[in-house]
Image (cartoon, rainbow, N blue to C red; front, side, top):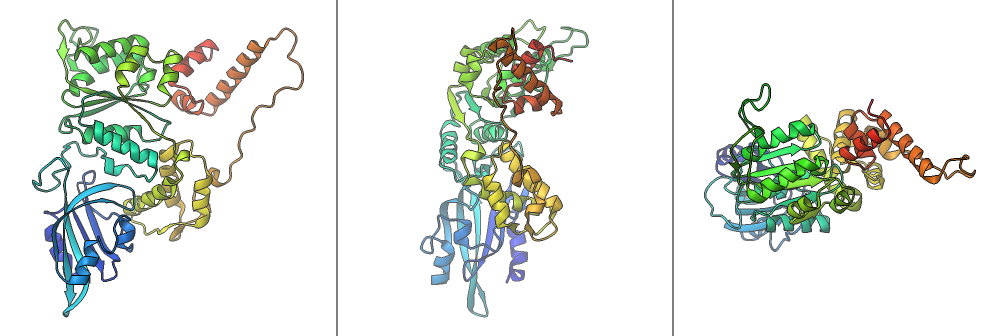
Length: 454
């Protein structure tokens, strides 16, 4: 049945955002949707699924496919708000047409364009207004977890406002994904989205990176716009903001408050209208208490706060994300893997995922490199996921402390030993800090305290 309609669909690709063909029973035989990141139509992984499975909110009464199959008449220009199999919310205006073969009704074809509640229908992909391809939107956040769905609703509500947003959660929970979605759904979406990891570069370089430089301010300095100016009219995302030097935090606070700043070596203030979205991988209250984040800066950055739950606290999303990444790597690697075995699914559910969604994605990619069949087996996934021994917690010593050693010295030695062992098994200080659940700045302070800088 598909062959008869391929030429017609090829002509439609330049005028619609999604196409779906289903047989008489509602089984999807062809499905393609426009992807801004790919700048073209892609298979969403729904082929072979029932329409009611791909879009769980639909019923035989509300589905345009089943209505067309009952009446034989097309359904034209119908607005739909649907949540798909992956938990993404999409808004469409769709037309569904009957497909006949020899006078027999054999299925339907549906063509759709995207729309946004607050915009007019003005052509192809009009609701994907962000010209900076590759930025995520709320539809890209895959979840069925109630807490995550509530966070998506919060982003939808606050995106249009200029208030700063502070996002915190463990490494790999999707902080930048949420930051990009905030920008993509905001009135600033046509402006730039600039991202900077504050822990990735030294403090002296970070200052000039943020504020820019003036020719002659130091040897080799040139007139260069800082990120605050580059993001003018858009969004500046500051990741790991708690790793920033406290003196620089004061300058950032002043720039945010006054909407102007002075480049390094400059004599004139520069104005910038920028929304600040920041992120950290520790509870901000803890960061303030430990002296890693200025309290006044926290109050300014945390006007709106988003706390992202770790993957281990949203187990319903593990199978969902696994299926999503299987489909993604099928397209990327041109494979036809149908899914994971029951044993693998159980192993994934039993694992704690300290690296969160990023670790799950890498595990699926690893399995694709090893899998030789049509289903991912235990032997294909990283061994540590299904067979790992937890490190034994240090047993309290039964004997008394050595003569002359107090509790404080014993704790100091124990902490130093943990840091040394973690550094020995890490490639970078940042990696070691993540393992120890510390910021890079806090770990560097402890390294200096214990003379471990070498």
